[in-house]
Length: 282
Image (cartoon, rainbow, N blue to C red; front, top):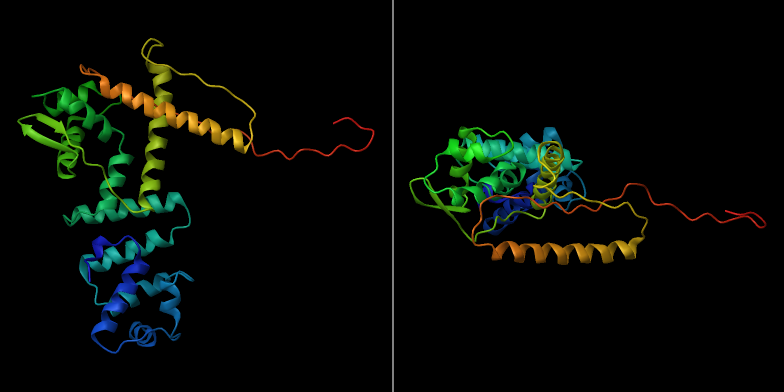
């Protein structure tokens, strides 16, 4: 059975524990429930099938039944908190807790790396900036970032990027980007992207007041559309983004890091067309 840190779903971990025990001995759901101290013989199967949630009191019972102690016990509890979160905000908080606990115990989890990179705006900025500044120390790199960032933050980010395989250190203060991309679960990736978009939108708002119109380009249009038109516009935006990436890749003398936000979002709820009464105008 894989280490618990390789799991991002407590239900899958519980099921794998059950299957492992079942392979090596006579073990049933009834016995699993009894071992954990539950009256219902099917409760844990219902939990693993996603038909109900593991309760807070049940966390300790199940963890003890599976022989979890120390970090594994704490990590399992956080997995349950993550899996039982009712909304994205709660899931983000639980994922932060998982990453913090793993970091304290010097254990690396993929989802935590992914979330940390996208949640911290300075991470992608430093990844782009560091290769442009060979021999620069963290304070020099921090001084180039428009959003206030400390030298200590830059140092920690550089260490994280190297550890995550997103930068490779080729000499003292010299870095190169790798082709590696961060991986994560189907649950963590959308949360990470959501957090990044929220943070980058906040930086865009600050840019309106801070940067001159020569350095930035903001434009927008308010329009009435329907679902099919929305889909067509999204296709155009996706094509535009790909073309912008191709143009950026052609640049050989990079001297600055930019962020492009493409935003298309609803300003109203959908409106149902009114049916006019006979003889009356809408």
